[in-house]
Image 1 (tube, one colour):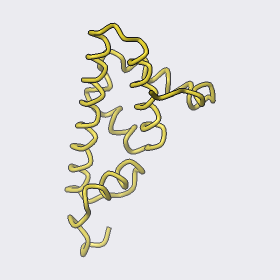
Image 2 (cartoon, helix red, strand yellow; image 1 turned 90 degrees about the vertical axis):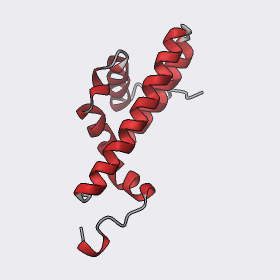
Image 3 (cartoon, one colour; image 1 turned 45 degrees about the vertical axis):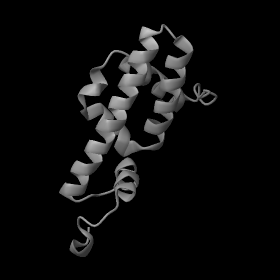
Image 4 (cartoon, helix red, strand yellow; image 1 turned 90 degrees about the horizontal axis):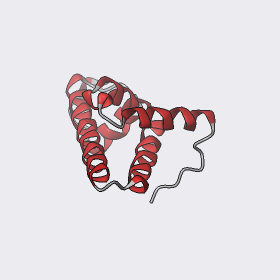
Length: 112
């Protein structure tokens, strides 16, 4: 990356480039990982709420939306796999849905 632009990216641009798995400066990569962790934490909280309410529909919707994000963002998926959130309860469901999506079985998943 050109030195002139190092550290001058907006958070939106860092997010876009990071999700696309494009090169980022070390500082921008740290920002991306922080943003990704925030997204993963939000997913975790949503899943915990859905589990506590025994709401299978909400869990399925959260997983479908999250899988859509991961499938469309190779850098986000890489950050997910490198994080401790990847070992959360429910991560196996995310992995299963990602596999189905890649195999074409999850193309019609609905997000509510």
